[in-house]
Image (cartoon, rainbow, N blue to C red; front, side, top):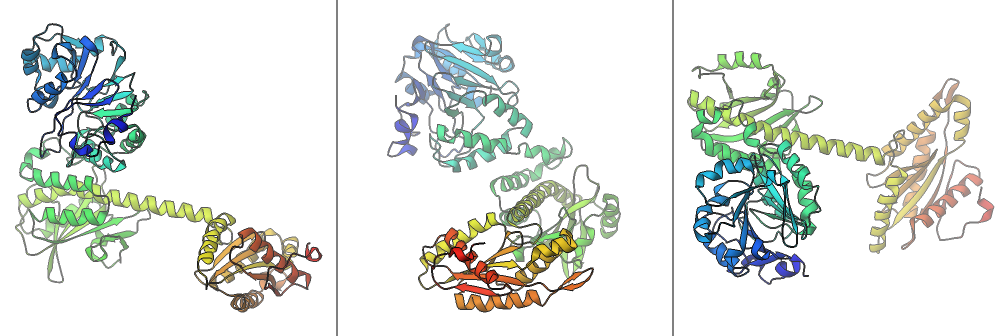
Length: 617
């Protein structure tokens, strides 16, 4: 049997399949029989499972598509072979065609497969179809050559919603789950970018993350090979795991977060479009600069906004500013900036000050304060969380000209605070995650005692430098091994604590006196490796001699007085094609020659001479 990709994706113009008047077999005896509605990003799909006289129609659709759907069904089976009509929820995009079907089929053998909660609504169509309830049949339906399993996914999006799994083809008919908005609809999702069609659909449509997580967990119990949603595009096998993983990380129910009381939208009905666009902006954009720029354009519908500025406290209570002049990238804020003094302010203190600033008192709690700065008018808007009594974020809205201080203005500002807070908090979380990731990475590549790079990092970074050196014919690269002379005596005489101080002192001297492009590695114990790109052996000799002088010029303070520290070094110039291991062996050989000849000196090797057993210690 051909795979779905072979049958459908291999089509020279797969985007035209939806517009075709032919059914499409997406799996063994499983057919797509939907119909493309032009200029609609909310396409609805209908599926047929061919089972002889017990064939199954899944989510029959609305009056906009039913006639075309039945024409496609008839190209596969006679209409009187339909026995089961599955309605995975009761919305009109699935069920509005049922009265038409009832007249068209005129058969007492047709059963309407649904959940008892949907039956309570669908019975009002006055259909002559008998109901076949999944919850009364052990959530299974045995067919001619396969078993259908019904998967309960309550509140996603309807209380009685369920999905249907075909055990033979391993196709999951997922109803609203995995649905998407598609401006340029295709029957088959092509790549991972399709998730951006799923994201806004689920963030809007699913009531909460917990509900979505429960539904996904229910579906994950089945060995899914393909997902056939009611909306969007069919998800082929190679994208199934990716889409699951992405949805499991998604936050939903953002509209619920945009109101503290259930009647807020009624009071602010005139702002519905603005709020919807703000939410869409937060869903569609990841970069904060894109969110901030778009928000400014949206808010300009209600206020004479010149620019938006954002301020927030990070986890260390340092202020970060997001300003248009910095492209909203985030910079540490100076203490003399006006909004900084309000960050961390208690809610009651803010309210007291805001009421004094307003010449005309708006009804209810003031959401902003008017400030004149350098002959410019700004609205300062603190962002208090639902339970927080302190403002950890603030927005400054610069105005082109004064606006009336009215109850309407206050309502506009109140309606904006929650989405602005969500956007800013999300950005601060992203920054904190990135900061922690960078810190963790630095900890993994830095020796905690000396601050030098580790051997793990050396193998990765030096290998890249060697590859660059091989490609650049006129470049040069030197490798130096540096060892502290008689270091064991320091540990034996004054203890390891003083030995650690000596290593820290020497490492600091080395780090402060090398180039940014040089790589300094604590190679082991008291031994350091210095990789110097674009540095010839003669240049390396001069620089290393200077480093040795600096080390010896800084004695170690001990309980018995200053102790002079010296270092031995071995340097080589890496030859093109030479491996890291071989270059290190040559540099190590040069170091041993320096120690053999009395220590406190530098030895260089100018060619690929063999290691003499005479100097192997």
